[in-house]
Amino acid sequence: MPRPKKRGPGRLVFSFSMSPLSSTTVQGRVMQLMEGMDELAKMEGKSRSEIILAAMAEYLTQHHPGNPQVKLFSVTDNLSQEAQVSISQAKKALSNIIGMIKREGVNVGYWKERLESNLQKAAKTYDRTKDPSLLKIIESAKSILGL
Image (cartoon, rainbow, N blue to C red):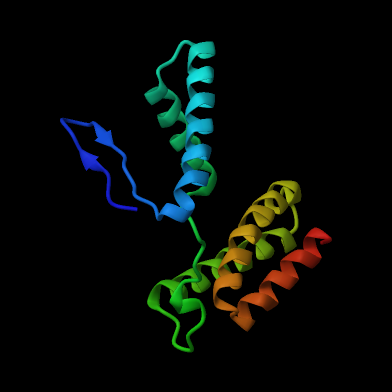
């Protein structure tokens, strides 16, 4: 499908070419979609362009950023500096909170809430890095929370 042609400021015209074998089926489907859009636009008091823009926006919110890719540092032996920092931060945060929970006279409920929220972040970091020392702290946090 060729790139859309720009006509004037902010206006795009879409065009595409097809092989003779597929053109009849596709053109029929396009015509059905256009008729459906025109019907919807009339019912909602909007233009066809507004319907198309709304459909594009909805599609982007549901599908962005597209095909999820694994970041390279999660599958290499040499972890990037970003991954090492993430692991260090996750371990430090969980360890500090676990230490606070073990102290006497603290609001354990408050610290368990903090632990639960930090546990989710640490789990995402572990999923990317598979760091065994982080896993030990995550398991300790889970046992405190009864998970």
